[in-house]
Length: 359
Image (cartoon, rainbow, N blue to C red; front, top):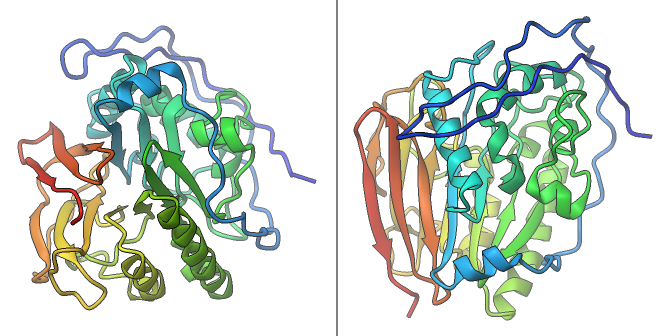
């Protein structure tokens, strides 16, 4: 039976945007009462879902929007410990993306892991993340990162929070509205118009390598089925494979089996986080070579945490910066082409471009 932790809720806030990030708080609140919840032992790894799950029919608004392409926003590494400042980098990002959700300017927000630092329990998600990012939840598709979102034996509340089980935050993420509870580390996939996106928790490579290998087989079947159905493919996960080194992290080489599967099925792009900066690769294959039908790897970990400078220069990275917080907006078109724009919210670096349809 699913365990429940009881914590007091934070008072509700209303997030809006006038200009870039001006907001009005509907109510303030003090610190939630009660003790922090205690760690629990992680349950056995869940059974993997069937590949290429059938997605619910889109709403009329989504259908209309897709006439011009599926519109998404994406970012990871979002909110620091004890932060609820609206004028912080995290607050600015959360406010702008929430406004895009509220005004139906995007069809989905892809949360790339590390939602709330440092080790976030229900209390932290409700008191801090919800204040700054809660307006994104109705269109949120999420993946869990390793230790900040989920560490077996220490913390397992992100899946509760996304399923509306944390007292004080009853709203469910978009994928949970459609699928119910999704455990931390459980893969899933979703069709967005003509695009098929798989969501993977790279934390499994750290916590349960056998389960990560099982996910490799799941991903192979899932992408094969979607490709056979004529879908264009993308994958979202937290830890990056195609990336420059920083003082905090280097390439997550353990993801190579997943990369091999992505290359096999000609995934068009990936989205990842973790590095606390921004990078974009050339279309790259599984041997680090720039090729016409390769994977465009976006690493977007500029959600609000302190930025890290680069300590290496891989040849497949064609654009990068570590001086600007913001998020990525993309338009995914039915022919497999896509465009992107990095939207700066604290800083001035930018990136924008298009990739044509596959030949």
